[in-house]
Structure formats: structure tokens, C-alpha cells
Length: 189
Image (cartoon, rainbow, N blue to C red; front, side, top):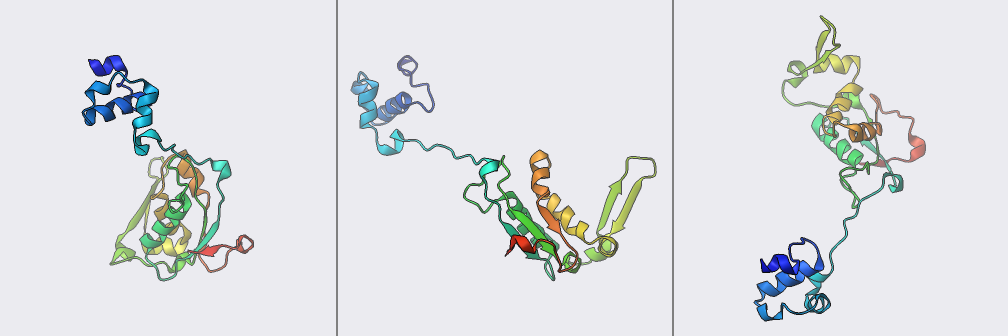
């Protein structure tokens, strides 16, 4: 009851911290001090609180990265690309803001996959119409459109919302070693 009267029910207010500090130190007779006096006696760790940094999408500097997928496992390439796209390695990473970089993946046709998944793994799509179910194996998709292998793996590792859509647009995948982004001077990841 005494805490509620003195205003210590505030979670992050200075007055509540001060009185909690004194209670923990058994300063029961010091409760009649004013707020300024009690804040002056607090240790610096309780006196100053950190402000949470939140990045703005317009102020993020975006770099270009290139990943060579030749003879690398599909999952490893996708994880590396997804982390760069989200901006997870940056100090300014903010979960609800697009802070990531552009990623170019080359040699998608030479990506590896473990075990017998080349034959056993299937990709399914459904048009929404009756009889619109199509499925194909990993090997068949590699023959037809190898970029889709990397794109689908990365898509599953980023958020499935509007933020994920804006992140996904920065991914560029090419089946061969040629790409049209040489002017951006991409760094090797």
C-alpha cells in the first residue's frame, strides 16, 4: 500500500526506481526524501536508461553482395542470402524494418543437395482450378528453371508478409556465371 501511495508502481519512472533501490538497501527511514534527492543517490546504472534504436528504411545504406552457388549446398547458400537480405549482420538491424542489402546469386544450376533428394524431393504447385496440381522433382526443376531452386529456398527463410516481399525483391538469381550487376561492384560473400 505504501508503494502505491508513493508512486512506485511506475515501471520505468525514476521515482519508482529510486524507492525500489532504497527498499532493497533497507533505507526505510529515507522514504521521506524528495524525488530529486533520491535520484541523486542512485547508482549510474539505474539513473540513466538506454534509448532503443530503431532504424529508418530511408536511411539504410545498402550494399551489393555476390554468392557463387557452384558446388555449395542449397541450404547453406539460402541461409547466407537470407541473412544478407534481412541485414542480420548489421549493427542497425531492426526486425520490423528492411535493413538488408542486395544479393546476387550466380551458378544456381550447379548447386548441390544431399542424399537422394535429387530424385526424391518434389516441388508442388496448385493453380486453384480442378486438376491444377503439378509436381516435379528437384532434378526436373534444375533442368527446367534452376533459379527457382534458390529463390524458393530463400523465400522460406524470410518473413511471409509485406516486409518479406520488399526483402525478396532485392534477391537476384542467375543460372550461369554471368550477371548484369557488375556496375554495382558487388562484394563476395
